[in-house]
Image 1 (cartoon, rainbow, N blue to C red):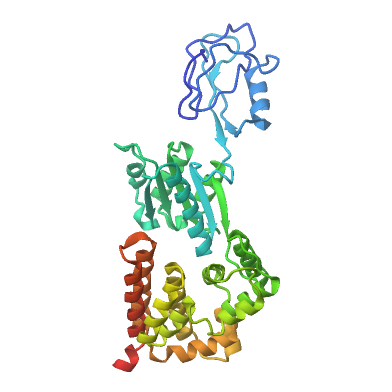
Image 2: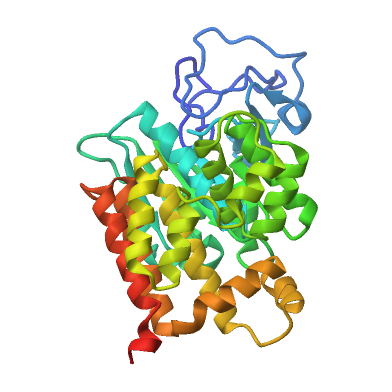
Length: 420
């Protein structure tokens, strides 16, 4: 390499001049993509033939944040020299720190929806903190067709930061996977690509390619054991900056069940509503139907079809400072419980509790609430709650109106069977 020559495309371009063939070629420096070769080069070690020393050096030495991955055998270009001289290709991959939310690629692996959503939200928040005008594109696997990634990553007129989220990346077509792999080899600055992958054998080639490229990886495993759910609840309270007794955490898991999103919503609600340490008595009050101002009281009245009472509880909850997002979460939890139980086969509460991940007492309560529900009613209610959730998170001008509209829609859906 000549001093000052730019290294491009993750490869060392052929030099226009080589050392005299009577001298052994030496390693003059390790230069990364986007850097220029220094004007004054110095040896990293005793001069040896390239084939011996370069392989030894790059095979096991980490250079800053970059670690060698592979290098090609020299392409022989004789030039009449006694010693073979060639152009070496080498690639160094940046190992992205787990704390680097703005790294070029984030790989979220697992099937826990809440954790996957949080992985996306963390990257988006970091990007918007760096650039408030960040362009966020959230795509399902079928929306990323061959050529789409090239369009989305093409230079913008306004040069704003971008976050590209690809969900269910394991379902991408073979041609699209080729596009993504090519992008992983040379990602673009100021673009954060977030790949959500279920893990497992399907789409493993893309998973391996992202890891090999040094993607920041976030584990999002499905929780299957009670102990894991208990650990999650404890961590939620710590993250929220609140203290909860071990008995309170256990009581919450027993009351809510296995859905992490519902557990997180309950922990956030308790943190918002209660001052001081959260103990078992507090959890008991909130989850035995005695918290008039709680979001779950609103949801209970709505899924029972009692619109007037639900609206009254909603207004009271909002007046006492309950966050609107907690109310939409409680509504979603209530409707999903109706849907789960209505699609389950009959059986004893204890058997259904194990199958659906709910405590037995909740099975009995949901059975009473679901009497007026139909499958179409569940669909209508879930759509209404989703619209309200978008409204309270910034998609609408009046969060309170969005909540009232959702409560009425859920209550009406609860009466579809009775009204027909």
